[in-house]
Length: 318
Image (tube, rainbow, N blue to C red; front, side, top):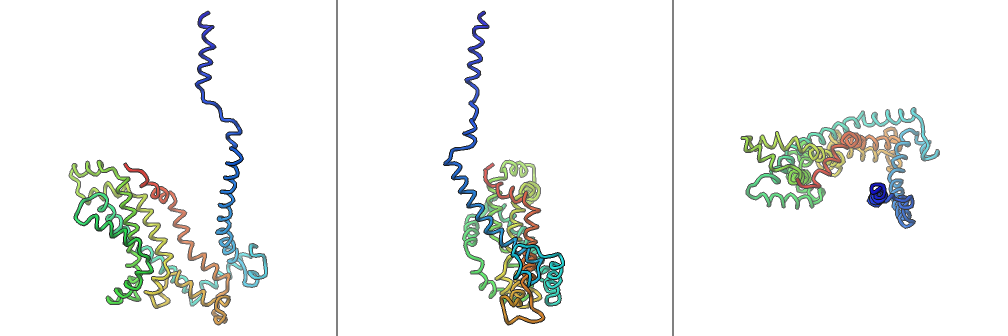
């Protein structure tokens, strides 16, 4: 009798201890919350369309003839034959100069990227996890140099390279490209916050040299930040226009970004004096623009996972 009389009390206690279910109104949110979400979504949609519409137009323009581009709907698809015509016209420009420009961009960007990694990653490790004289001064210098615009350094770098006779050679572009203090700073932050110091100390106690600690312990753990530095360096090198334009006087040494100016100067829509047999039409110029950004897009798509890991890895301290 006693057990039966007390059972409802236990049931009531358990029912009171359960968290209250959220009402449908709570899930839906208040009118004020919905209005805020609507405004945010509207702003994001506006920004998305602002950037997406020109890209869509550019992609569709590569499938049209110059006449179709002007007369037809801007967002209509042309034809695959039109794309083939523009493709052939692009790679026939100046006897295939576009192929050379793409190759030059790849050469300058990849070689400079390799040098950047060889320099930046050990430098960031040394600044973060080792003690030596002038360490703090080097770190402050790195941060100060990051604040100087790259264009402000072009003239002194030009005078320096001209003195040693490197102007007009690939090294005139590769060496300045390799100067990437932001990479040193990124690796410094990563090694300072995400590498367990006890793990490195244990390796030293076991007799591992400092070089061995770096190559066998720290470097394998730093894959995300290495990928992040590589991506930023590649994008900066590939998209750099002003430095190669100043350092390379010969058109056959141009990277793709500088070569685009030659295509632009040969387009009658932008330069009426260029009308003639060697002129470039707007659909062909649109295709060249797509070709100039495609490598960066491909690199980004294949490295998303590492980029996200690299950006978030230094957020917490071990």
